[in-house]
Image (cartoon, rainbow, N blue to C red; front, top):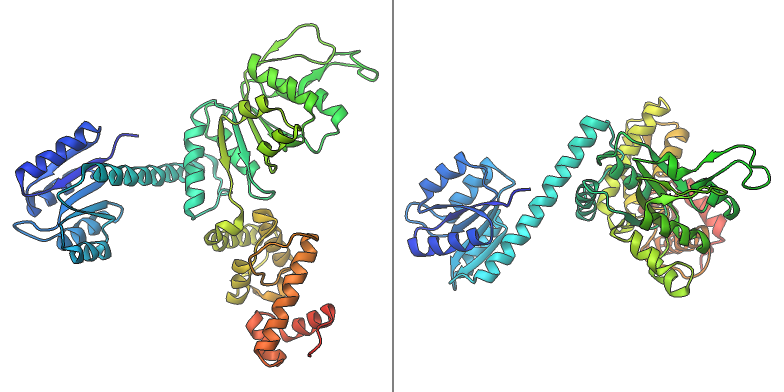
Length: 449
């Protein structure tokens, strides 16, 4: 993208020239204005990204101009310059919508730092807009749903990576959406009209994985009655997605390394190497650096795969995405199962927001689908959910079911104590029916002491 275009609003000629020339030398597009009136004319005639605004001008003040700029373009970023000792002006400007402030005399290094920080933010916003519009118009896909800053950064990385042929490693817990990201990278790349071939390295027996990846010639082994083309050949000119790469046996890791280095494969029983042009995307829920230290994953292969890493955060670290994901999956399964569900109750939504989702987005999707299928009413309630409110924290031992059960039991006991063991009140505070609470009390053997 082009560098940000900056409007410098400063009535002092020397100061305006100094700031403008400094920013121009750093590669920015800069235009100056010596008054509020001139600044308004420039702002209306150009696509300004950042305004560097002196708080006091001969014909107006900073607050008035901030409001004027924001009314025209709410996305514009404004850095206010105020006299040293007039911090109250800076506070007022920030409340009015300014992003940053500087005091006179302006520290040029601080100015550059703040401008670059804003420019990076603008790039991410624009790349996310490009991604969403591309998915909407070209692919009619909304599977990549998010609002959080963490996922905006992931989306920005996807956009930049998709324009290249670089090998990519996607990491994250199970259910965070690694396959969805691999799909997006391929769909947004120049290879989008070529095959996207997916291989789950943990789902194929070790003795069959090599022939699945590289194929074999007739007679290569007992039972090889005809030639078989491997996944890499099928993916030629396209993309291959190697899911759960951390489960690949060491002997195959060395062969994959050769494929990456030489851009060629050999079928089992073959006499000649076959050139291929394949973009490799790998994914794992394991910590490959730890696997390298243990000797179960080749260090040289790790570095070959880890040219660009996309780390997907767990859902518990981006809870502000939960409401939009709930609405997305509710509509998806409402349409699929032809149900007339109008929505989800506030209590049920609150429980889901508090829940830790050890299974991440995949678990959330399964919970919503189950609720849509089983609910008898027009709204999904707490009774339709297969979860209860869960506090944050980690339990070292036990299955997910054990962990959730332990936390649920403690929450129920706390609610009963807090409400003097009045079950009606305790059930209301937990967001569940009294009938469900009585069932849980019996299930966990909770007795009033």
